Image 1 (cartoon, helix red, strand yellow):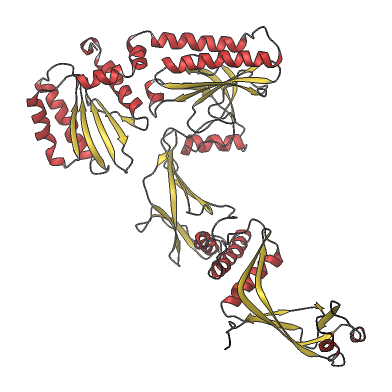
Image 2 (cartoon, rainbow, N blue to C red; image 1 turned 90 degrees about the vertical axis):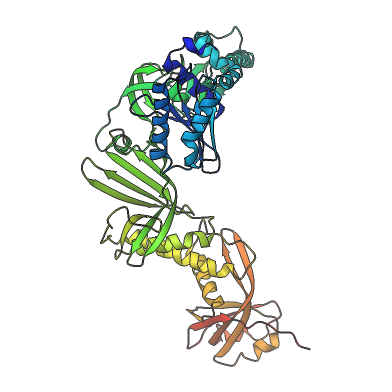
Length: 576
């Protein structure tokens, strides 16, 4: 390649594109001052990064250019190394270094202690460029215009129906669109294209609507979906997805819209959270598209539309280990998957994460503009989760919602990020729910020690099942459980034993049964057995007892003492 004929900006942009398309997860960091070139950071998979410093120099380096590289290196050592785990640093220039310059680079960088420092020169870049002909063609040939022509053909083909009917029509359209999408995929270095025919209709708001990543079936990697109606009940769908994380920067897709919503409406609240804190709306929002830029056809038509906004460009993993800290107990709930977003106006910040079991979501909203802060804790259903994972969180929520605690967000094991919120008002409903489920989780943790069956938190539970689980846990802990009873049906196995007591007003009763719990359609029987002792029982109808036969049912009701007790039966021992 004739690098000398390219502008400095073109050299840096092309080389950056070349490296980023080889490493799709990498990203560009452009220094804010001076001619520092371009930093490319590529994750290595072991929580470290490879750094590439791209310079536009195509000829033997002058003293000024050497100083420029030295400045970039010292800035990297001062600002990047202390906060980023770096594996390697590579200087990239479309000029092959001499041995003297390689020695100079070694002397400059040796004290940093990196695993690897290299110089990627012209020959290496030429080889890489030869392996990505579509990128070379796009920048220096007719790839850009070829892409535009193919996109225009694809859009035209979606409007002009072949001379066929029914399934033949759909097959003809599908085949033509797949061929065009395949051709687009070959020539566009920055985006993938995929086409399909699908059953359905577009909404009436915008017949040529394009929903950004919102069409059913689109995954998180897709950035744009173009949909057009074909025939009476079918859609032609073209998905345009980035080849690398920086495709948007190298070949931008931008849409200029005006948006307005009625104060107090869900749309207004969603817009406020998005612009102030960078929180992606969970509902489509009405808008007027007044401008668009990007690959031809991959931009929405102007006019009224429904826009589904994805996560803000500032959304990222915060890199912090956080915890929810509750006082006065000092109980802490570790938070994971911490996401940080910033508002478009630069004034608001949002931190959000969940506990390890997904039982709660914690969201912090801070606004520098009006010096306000908000901490939101949202409980979630825990059905199907292991009790041991959710118990700690449920107990923390029980304490929090009791109204006698303060709560703050803190670095895990470190200082608090915020002053504590004191005098949290008691929320009776949330406290009762947390208390109930915390008791249930603790009981299931206790019972799990007595069985090989996997016990999970229930999806559904009635009052009888709830108390059965709590009582079973109390029994295996060695407690005596006392309950009032109102009667029981006894199946006769020994008629003589029954008739022998028919004249007695009251008698004691003791029954030994296997310990069992039931919930979510499951029955779990433990090896343990428990004893039910009724100190006073009597026959509901003593006259009906005479003449009973095996298999008959006799009703027993409480005597003078309406209570019974249950306790764990001692383990049975063998005899010799």
